[in-house]
Amino acid sequence: MLRTAGVTAALVVAGKQWVVPHWYHWGMAMNLRLSEAEQDLLDRLARRSGLSKNDVLRQALVEKAAREGHRAQVERSLHWALDRYGDVVRRLGEA
Image (cartoon, rainbow, N blue to C red):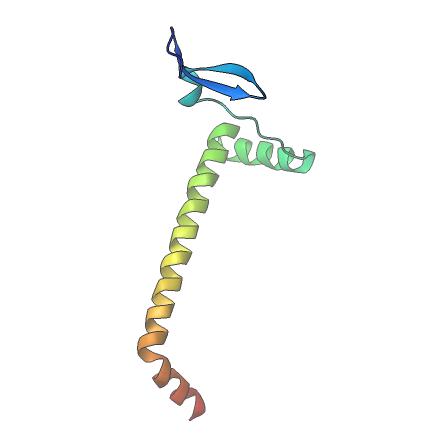
């Protein structure tokens, strides 16, 4: 690893050394390639919500993570209920 002004890492690819600046690892922007339809949808969502496109995408990411966490909790609860009450539910269904 190299340490010079503003440099914290060196990457060697195909025998070439690339110096990666320290700032690159924190808060670096990313590119997102959207289809024209997706771009139009993002534009409409941003306009309707009064948020920037960046904020709309960040909010969507947080909401998606929350939904997945909720689904996982529901699945754990379902497995627990089936383990505990599965026989009762089957007997009720047969009655």
